[in-house]
Image 1 (cartoon, helix red, strand yellow):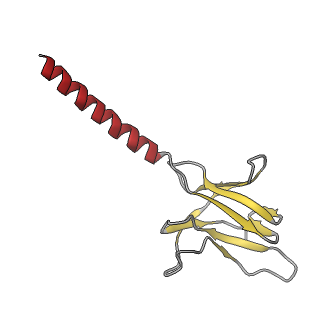
Image 2 (cartoon, one colour; image 1 turned 30 degrees about the vertical axis):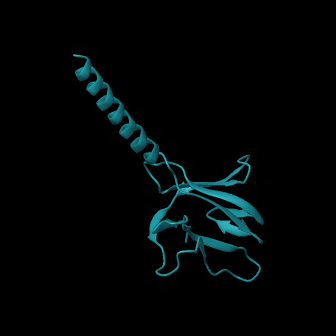
Image 3 (cartoon, helix red, strand yellow; image 1 turned 90 degrees about the vertical axis):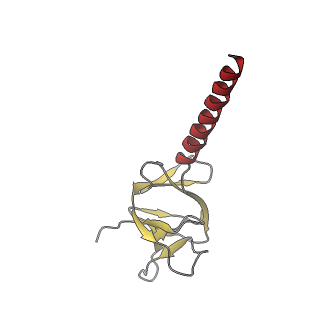
Length: 126
């Protein structure tokens, strides 16, 4: 009787450990700290030079992206993005910038979290 009870306790502990591990992995989000030495633009906002946290907000919908200042006291952008494949052979790229008129801040077209095959394409009004 004692052996069966011990066995069931070990099985229950193993199952609980697997569930906790899977649950913790599901809540991980994409996250990057990016520093810009000049102003850059996102849809509807211009970011002054500085360091920003780019993150996917929800593990269930990684296409929802938020951009905050480094100390999280101000949110500059919260919006839906589209998945985009990372350019081949460019594992270090974290953003792609679009062309802009002289004197205008460069538009961030996509953000690629480190070590991810896909990134987040920002949606601009045309």
